Length: 339
Image 1: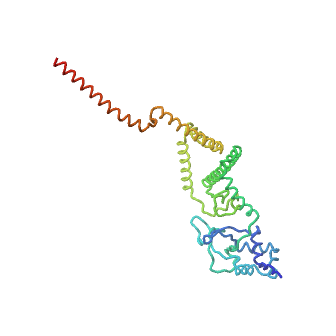
Image 2: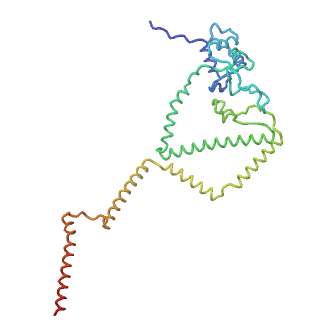
Image 3: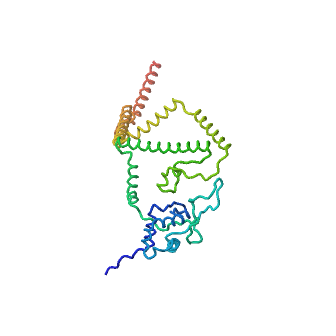
C-alpha cells in the first residue's frame, strides 16, 4: 500500500491563511540584513476577535486565547518576536514610529500586545501573478535587447511610451516637492503626497498610497522657513538668468533630434548595405591605386637574365670602341704634324 502524504500542521495552515488575509495590517522592514514582513501584537488581537472563522482551521485549539495561539506559533518557529532598533525618539520627532523600518530579534520570545512586533518566518506562497511575472521578465529583457531591429512604427510607439512615462514621473516628483515646499514655508507642515514613492523596501500597495502620513515632527521656526524660501527664490532666479538662449536651445534640440532619428531609422538592411558599400569602395580604391602606379612606371615588367647580362656587357664594349677611335685620331694627328 502506498503511504499517504504527511498531513500539514494545522498551525502552518493557520499561519498561511492569516498572512494571506489583507485585513491583518502588516509592513516590511529590515532585520539582520534580511527583508521581513511583520505585524503588531495589538493588530493581531483585533484581527482574531473580528474574524472568528479563521479559528476553525485550528480544530481542537480553536478556543485557545490569542496569547496561547501566538506562543504556539513562536514555539513552532512560524513567527518570531522582534523589537525596534532605535528605541529613543530621534531629533525633530515627538514619538517613536508606529511601524519601524529596522528591527532586531527580541530576547524574550513571548506574546505581548504592548509595542510587540512579530515577523513571519516562513516563505510566502507564490501567487499566480508572481509566477507569470517570472516568465515575463526574461522576455521583456530580450525585447529590450532587440529594440534596434524593431520596425519603424514599433520604435515610435516604444519611444513615445517611455518618454511619456518618464515625463509623468518627473512631473509627479516636482509637483509633490512644490506642494511640500509651499505648505512647509506657509504653515510649517510636512506634507508629502505619495509618501512612499521613493521607498526601496515597500509593497506596491504602499508605493502608490496617496495620502500622507501624520506629521509627528516639531513645527519649524519662522526664521528658518523664511531663510530657505529666500534661498529657493535666489536659486530659481540664478537658473533663469543663466538659462541657454534660443539659438543654444535650437542647437541642442537639433542634436537630440538627429540622435533620435539615427536610432529610429537604423535597420539591419541599412547596416548590411553600408558594409557592402564600404567593402566595394575599398576594393575600387585598391584597384585604382594599382592602375595608377602601373601607368607611372612604378612596377617595370620583369626582364630575362640573358638580356640583363647583355645590357650590362654593352657599356664595356662601347667604352673600348670609343677608346680605340680616340687612339686612331691621335696617330693621324701625329702624322700630319710630321708631314
